[in-house]
Length: 115
Image (cartoon, helix red, strand yellow):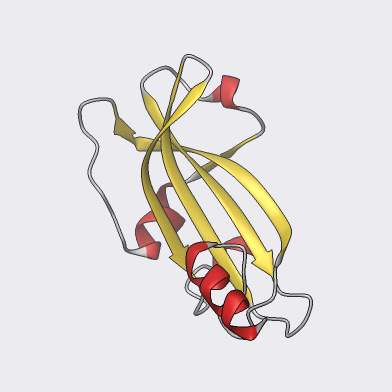
C-alpha cells in the first residue's frame, strides 16, 4: 500500500507530502482579486502579491463582473500535522469558474495571511 499512497499523493493536492495521508480541509475562503480584470490577467507566483491584493468576500455574487477571484483552501494532515495552502485563481463566468492558475504552498509562505 505504501507505493500506492506515494503515487496518489503526487497527484492529489489534498494528500500530505510528508506522510502520504489524506489531509482535511481546515479552512476555505473566497477572495476578490481587484488588480486583475478580464484581458489583463498575469500569472503571479509570489505569495506576497496575493497577501497584498486579495479582498475577502462571502460569495461569488459579490465579485464584480470581469474581476478575477481566488479560492483558498487550507489543508491539515490529521496524521502528522503538516499543513498546506492551495490558491485557485479563476474568473467567474456564467456560474462557472475559468481557472487560470493553481498555486500550492506548503512551506509556511501563507501562514501569516491565513491565521
